[in-house]
Length: 99
Image (cartoon, rainbow, N blue to C red; front, side, top):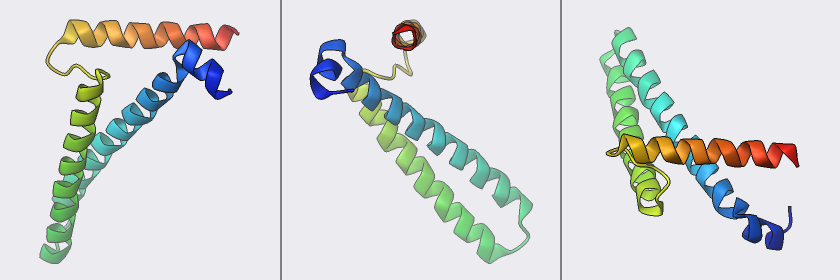
């Protein structure tokens, strides 16, 4: 899609929002996986390394969350606003897929 069309349709923002959402989901998944791995290892050294990665993942998640909140792409404290945003995104995706 060319830049003019992206700007006119708002798809340039939607693309950035989708990428940020994917980053947030990946961070959550990584955090969950590190937490499980910590409980499954018997080695104190491996556990310490995994704990460090877990802490880094939590910090990364916070950065992505703050970025998305600042941009208005994520409303963790207002479920109705978040639902409205999700429904708007779904409508946009349906509209694009029909073209």
